[in-house]
Image (cartoon, rainbow, N blue to C red; front, side, top):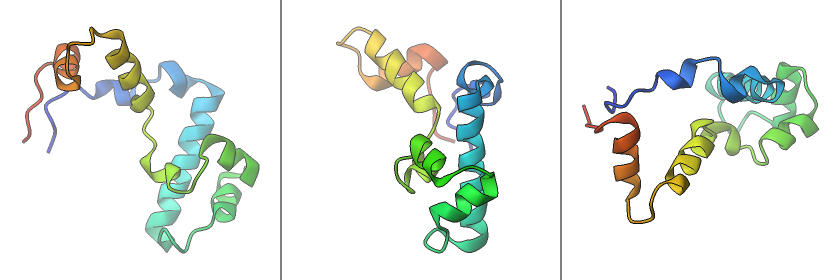
Length: 107
């Protein structure tokens, strides 16, 4: 089920996804999510994630300050915040989203 919004930008190779930082962030998150599925969230340590991604634990914490951030981070968050802040204050967040990607509809 989709929300009706164009999400094609999520998979394009532009912006942060092309940078080393973006690639590292994506690798860490993908590795963590895989380990969480395989072992369970509580059973997976930051050390295991770092080892599987072939980075240091310091690197993991540089990109994701908490273990929970590995689950909830979305690279579109910062872009959405930027777009909302650039719009007139009298508009609601939903109005801004509708202007950017068209009306969203559940189902």
